[in-house]
Length: 122
Figure: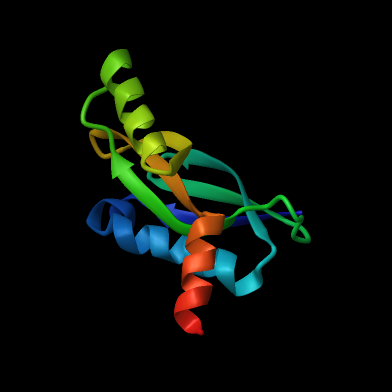
């Protein structure tokens, strides 16, 4: 089963951080939503999630990030994706919004971060 979240382009452009937070809240609320794809449909981004039971190998998403690319050249776009990947952000999708190309990234909670968080709670 697939569940969909529609994000109006106007909302995404006005507050990309809030749009990412909306996706994260949906994932955390159910614990059973896993990113599948994103489909640009005119002035709406349709984000698709697979609804299923959690698997041991599924990483925990700590953040969804919407960010515009500064350039659409192959070299600069590849460099931006590599820089974010090195920072622990995985590109999930790219899509046009407004006058720019945007990326949807996920930052996953690493085992080290989980260990630090659990130690801080003790």
